[in-house]
Every structure is written in structure tokens, then in C-alpha cells.
Image (cartoon, rainbow, N blue to C red; front, side, top):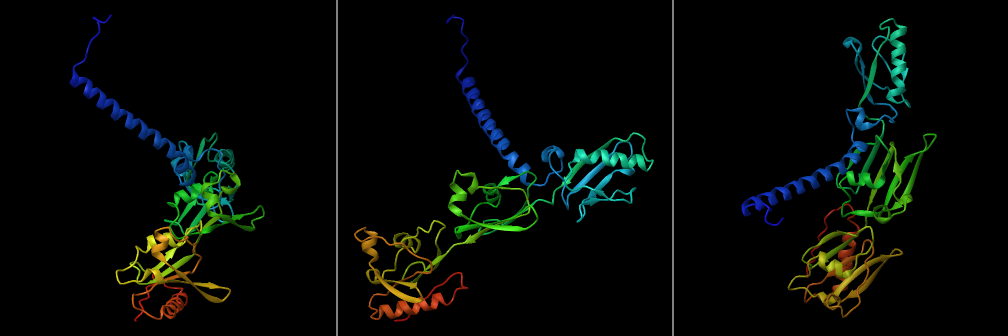
Length: 334
């Protein structure tokens, strides 16, 4: 049997291997695309009933395409009105469409054609052209605020994914407003970390439309003085910002700074507290790191400045009374 084996030339085997690897990559790409289709079909308006599904119930603002076979003049697009009705060009009486599937609308339209003696045995096809009755508004600290149309129930996490995720300014909570059975609105406060990472379905609820997802903005701390980067820095939704991480964000300090005399100004119960920090010791892990709180002000003094505490307090008061500024830089004179 070994003598009968046919050996391919090396070049042919190399080309075959390249083709097989190329086909393998294409297969994985096709597989990835198939995974992305269901979510797009659930959230994006579609022009085919196949993508939307026969179980979808028509809502206000949706656009339908009514096709009467063999009669182009009786066919056309209709939009569901504010009261849930559609009007056909040959029938002065409105037809209630909301809450019905396209399959349930077909016999109603066929009966209307027969009643007006326009067709003896009509054959009607109803398709959903666009969906506007299931809006989910995603806004706040997301990368791309967006209004989705939930053709099918989708999870809160999927909605955040469609909004391109959270920004670095995202806060600790997500406010979810959903309609109740009687139309009343209910707002829940969900922890951002649990929404993103929890396996509990209660932390990632299903949304069916008429919902608002608002990602709150997080807190900030401020850096002033002779730091390389000054201004406002976000505290992430985990509230795990520390002095060591702040040093990394502000890219250290300038050559003429005196980091061992750094001052942390903190507002507590209406009063300003002064906390002395030795940044080189904290960086070298010879001094314990310290968690930062919202609105903390880190002031890195200049070498030779005698009234460090007064300068730090002046910087803190200036920063804390300028809450509307997005980028704060306070440069104090000696």
C-alpha cells in the first residue's frame, strides 16, 4: 500500500495548506456573522417579516405593507396611527391593528375586500416594513446614545452593547425606567457592576420596548499644582480609585515639585479636611495607599513654597466652586 501512495509536490501541498487555512478563516468569519444576526434582528427595524418573526404584535407607529395579489391599486403601505388603527384606501372604517400579528390581520383585510365587493376570493399578504412602537432609549454615560426598536425582548446588557458600551465617566448606578401593566412608569436603580458581570437574570432584565436606560455619570477627583497632568479625573463605577492610581493618571509630578509634601483636601460634613501625603513613599510602597473619595483634591506643591496648606485650600475652593468646568487646571503663584 505504501508503494501505491501518491505524493503531491511540495508546492502543491503548500498551496493546499494555504487554501485550507484561508477557508478556515472564512468559516470562522461566517460563524461570527451568524452569531451577530439574532441580536440585530431583535433590535434593528427590518423590512422582512422573516427577520421580525410571525409572533411580533403590531404597535403604534409601525408601517405595514398590504399586498393584494393581482390588484396593485389595492396594495400599498399603511402606518398604524396613534390610536392603533390602520386605514385602507377603499374602506372608510378603521381597522384596529395594535396587539395583532400580521397573520391575524390578513383575514380581517380579506373580509373587508369582500364586504366592499372588490374581490371575491382575495389573497392578502401583510408584511412589517418598519417598527417604531418598541423604542428603548439608551443615554447617559454611554459611548453612543441610541434609540433601539425591540422587535423581540432583549436584555439590558444587549442594549448597552448596541450603545457601544460605557464611557470612562460611567457611574455606579444605571437607572432603568420601564412601563407597567397599566402604563405607569417604574424606575429602578441597578448597580452598574452587577448589570455588566452578574449571572443573576434579575440584574440583566429583559426589555420589550417603551423603556429608558440611563447610565449615571460617576464622581470625579481633581489634581492641581505641579502635577504633569492637572484637571478632573473620573472615578469608575467600582469606586476603586486610590492615590497610587491617581499618580499614574496625572503622569507623576514636575521636576520642581515637592511630592513628599502633597496635600489631599477632602470635604467631609461641610468641612474641609487636610491630609498629608508622601507620594514617593506611596509609589515605592513604603507607605500605605489610600482610597480617594468623590471631589477629593490632590495638590502637589512647588519646591520652595512655604504656605503649602494655604495654597492647597485655595486650589480646592477654586475647583469645588467651579463644578461646571470639565477640565480644571489651577496654577498657583508662589
